Amino acid sequence: MKRLIKVQYKRRRQNKTDYSARKTLLESGTTRLVIRKTNRYIIAQIVASKKAQDKVICSAFSKELVKYGLAETFSMKNLPDAYLTGYLCGKKAIKAGIKKAILDIGLIRSTKGNKIYAAVKGAIDSGLDIPCSEEILPKNEKIKIDIKIKEKIDAEAK
Image (cartoon, rainbow, N blue to C red; front, side, top):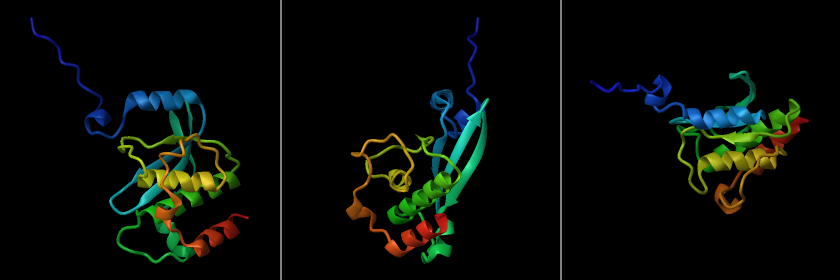
């Protein structure tokens, strides 16, 4: 008698979704700060889930920073750009009435001082309450943000 092989879900086979982690995030019932990294950009979104249907409340894309005075380069996913993207997303979330979120980094490998955590630090500095250890966030000396861009984001958020 042959053994049957259990085939994994399609998105798991393609390394796009970790279903056990997604289930725990959805069961928490709070909004999520979803951060994704592409080859050129950083994307930060505030997502609410009801009955496993995700609804994006607000989002920030690192290419949006160009309208605040950041010079557009080929890759806009360095630490300062990630921080400012998270900061912009946090300001938009607070304007939309969101005060608390949990972090969803998907299948991105978690390392100390990662670009993902620079975006989280930006969201925390904007006033969003995200449970995260201070040890894993990058140091301020490494981020080196442009203060003028941060002030323009603050001015628009008011």
